[in-house]
Length: 259
Ligand code: HXC
Image 1 (cartoon, rainbow, N blue to C red):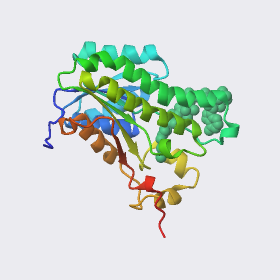
Image 2: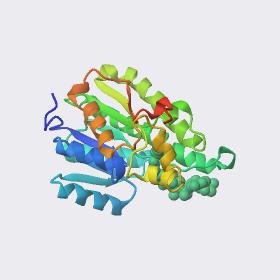
Image 3: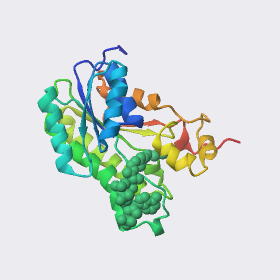
Image 4: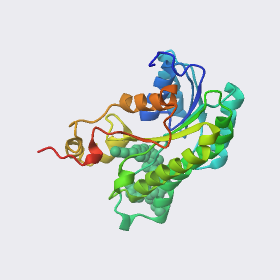
């Protein structure tokens, strides 16, 4: 079942892979035997991520990609297949976000987040489809969302709408692409410590303690908690799991509030 090489021979393409949860997923996949490709906007961060992985003994590839542009996503995915011979796993992890009351949000602010989160995920799925179809392991798409997309996200309506869109897109694709042996799932992390999202949305706004208390477990998660879920969903252990939204949020979506 859970073996050290359970992703051996697989090629994984991870957007937003240069840092945070994306890099943690890359590291976990690499340790489990996968070849990993990091796609991100910032070359310096990509270089630093490759060095981090190299220090762990993981050889990875980095491709500078802005997920807002379909041509860039397609070119990076096609290059991955040209160089590594296949594509088996797509992780749509890239995201952009900021708090802003909806009445103050400009159309460009709305569009920017929808472009990165929702459109970027669609571009990844669309560009990867033909390759995933040919995967000898069966293709696996994993998109990182949040249960705030389900509940609504006051103050970040653009991101909530984008994440809800990704959930619906993933369920549609799970049915459309099931016959092609492509599984399509989402992961909904809660607040994960030591990430840009939590730092900007919760720590810099003085909401850290409140957000911690909203979880049933009374603590923020670790990046590894999300990466472990992503490893499971990418592996044969989840071979009959598609259209699922795996919640990794310490019970936050239950709206638990400590007494
Ligand atoms: C109001 C803002 C704003 C803010 C940007 N805008 N920040 N409006 N409040 N704080 C508006 C700008 O005014 C502009 O609209 C439009 O958004 C585009 O802004 P740019 O700065 O030109 O865009 P860009 O440089 O491409 O930056 C994209 C970004 C940025 C999304 C705005 O924040 C970014 O790159 N973030 C990536 C990293 C990130 O957010 N990581 C965290 C993801 S965590 P106008 O009309 O003025 O032109 C996550 C999950 C969190 O998503 C879950 C927590 C539990």
